[in-house]
Image (tube, rainbow, N blue to C red; front, side, top):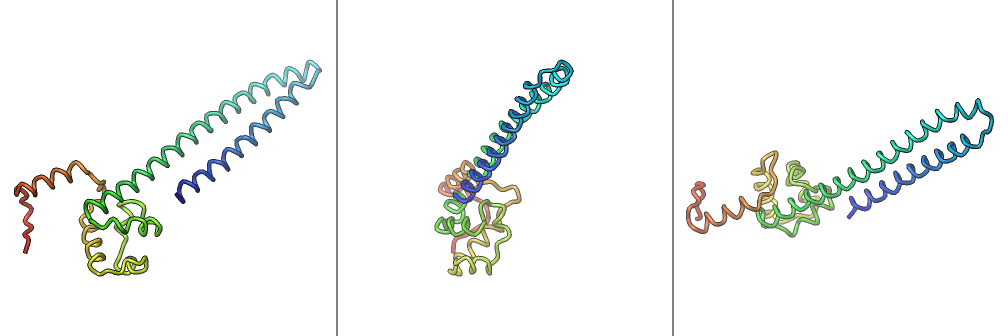
Length: 170
């Protein structure tokens, strides 16, 4: 929610800037058309073409900005979702999702920087949970994204007794 409110504030600020530029261009346009002598009218025609070009560029900028911000919101949301799914299905410690996000760990890649000390500072005090989180984080690949289909396949294989990954239960 902090990211979304920050992005909304940024959108509002940029929209105000674009609106301000549009207003200034409209004032210039009015000035250009209010001059009556022929020599100025000819010069004003080229200025008017420039004004139209600037208006088009502003519209393109507005459209691109809206699209990029929407993509950023979706991207942040999907990264958080991957983190949440990883905590639920891999680490089996979903209770720490909010704590991690509140402390700026909003995707799987950011977890790689966690240490036991950081976990303690965030309030994750149970030694077993600290060790489990750190162990699961070490297993993450650099490009790891939570893959629920792969997870389901592993669970089925383990259930059928076909999981030959060398781990034994004692």
